[in-house]
Amino acid sequence: MNQFHRLVCWASCALLSMLLALPASAAENSKPRKAKIKAVTYNLYVGADIFRVFNPPICGPAQAVNDIHNIIQYTNFPERAQAIADQIMYEEPHVVGLQEVSLLRTQFPGNSLAPDGSGIEFLGDFPADPEFIFKLDASDVQYDFLQILLDALHARGLDYVAIEGASPVNADVEFPAIEFDAACNPLGLPTDVRLTDRDVILVRANLDVNVALKNNFQVNAPIEVPTLIPTPAGLIPALYVTEYSRGWGAINVTIKDHSFWVVNAHLEVGDRLLPPSEGLNLVQAAQALELGQLATSLQPPLLVLGDINSSPASLVTDPRPAYGIIMSFPLSDVWMLQRPASKDPGYTFGQNETVDNPESLMFERIDYVFANFGDLVPKQVKAEVLGTDVSDKTPSGLWPSDHAGVGVKLGFER
Image (cartoon, rainbow, N blue to C red):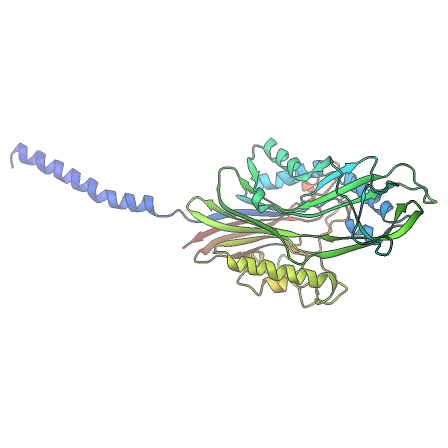
């Protein structure tokens, strides 16, 4: 073989080697990357027990609201938000589902009890029908939990965006707060306190959100609070009537080559003292059924995040029905996929109202990540509770929330 033929052979062999290598390289590049998603659910805690208004002290509901307002300031969400942001920074989630993302607004002096009735809206013919609501006109922002948390995340170099289309506004209620002396004499003018409850989905700013959905549940808890309102004839009994709405949000988000549905929800609290078919348990059951139907209507892979106010003992020793209902749908409790409850119950609720108890008081699991993996096979399932170690407390000794967060890291193969 002369030099020319050897050169042609060498070039042909080199070209053939390149061509043989190309399909393997192309196939490798076209192969979808392994699916993974990291998510956190966290109930931020409004900062006080709002149910105080249903069992008020001797001076009435306005005194209870004053107490609630004072406790919210004591439990100091701006400080607690720093601890929650630390937990999120540690987990580095793609998606965060938040509940009790409160917006607290005030008006001083309030007009709810103004003698001219300017702060009251009657729902029927007064005085024959004494049902009413206080107008929602307090506008001075005291705490915006969402903005406070976003600022804390940004200070840590974390760029998350709140998906407005998946973040419902739930209950929006306003009531006068009055400080009284021991004889129930007012010590000053009333402050109108307005509480707006929201659920929010946060997503890393570099991810694509393809679809965003939100709504309030169809069935919600009614509120009735007997109180006194001013009239030209003096204070007379009347009934404050409203509804404490709750809701859900959902997004379809693309993480690398894979899209996931993520749903975030907060269900009604329920009642341990009543059977599943009565009172707040009935409301919770209706909301859990609606949530399960929503999850079933979405294409997996799917995660459902949230506070459902029901334990795994649901419908056995716990009359609150939500967990039992949700598990009747094609959804898995991710915590149970990782570890048996007998080894680590994963408690997520129980700190005291002022979140300043020295040691953790968590005693039940009511915050969850549920999943339907579809055709993805989970190869890595890691779940942990967040914010329950003493080292997680704020400098002044507050727990991040009365709830623990739950963080999951999931890796899949098709």
